Length: 326
Image 1 (cartoon, helix red, strand yellow):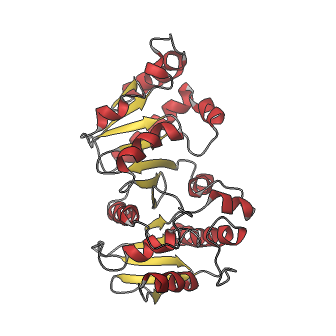
Image 2 (image 1 turned 30 degrees about the horizontal axis):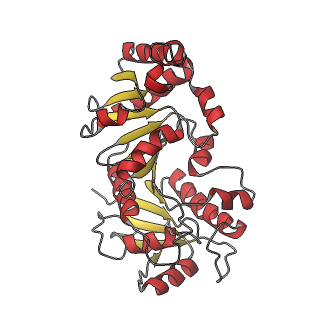
Image 3 (image 1 turned 90 degrees about the vertical axis):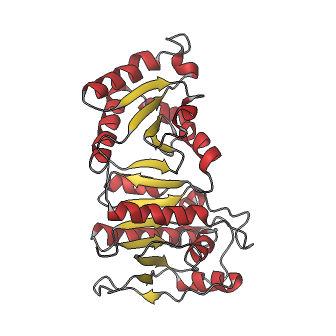
């Protein structure tokens, strides 16, 4: 089988993205064979590499010229970065990180790459740059309405009903029709390559999953009817399960997937257990997008202490999905 072509967006130039990319490709991570294309700036890579004592020497990449062998390439993305890159949120960094990502998405939409790995961006930097999206997933969701934010590790897998929304807005999505559509869409996505190999466990919204209506009525009125209809449609799904115990029920059971009803409900448990090796995966698109589950970490950027494990895991998972697409 031909090695997949995977794009790697450099992320915020002032964060730890360039460092973890350099460390991931420095030769000690045993990454699977592929054509890896860094979408970014040689200026950033060379400056960061010099500070770390790492030199990658990626080859220039042209989508019109198909390399015969796997290896590391770079797609130089034109941007207005200056040599003195700020270590923190800035409009300049936000614009550059967006351009890196946008170019990778463009090539994926043209089927020149089979997956994208994105280093962390700063939502504040995107805002300062005047960009209307909160992050990668929101940008992708405009182009692919079925895009969904999920988090994967060897110990836990979590699907999120809503992404980066204020809590009061996220709670408005806990409605029977929205839930049912979400359950059916995720079932259809996973059935393509993993038929019968998974079960969804749905978290309740209220303490103790509503305690039979004593602690809230969303479970009785919205969540349980949606689960019942999904089960009747052939989805392997159960719940609602009390949010304070649901993660205990899935640990050690890789076939069980938590459906969390809002961002922090799913991510607090996930990051507690899988922070170093967790991967953010966007599904529901013709190509896969993965990312480390940590942020830009401006507080340690430039100190040479960033841990690349989550980036390595993101690259490996993108390779797995590119070879066996959902």
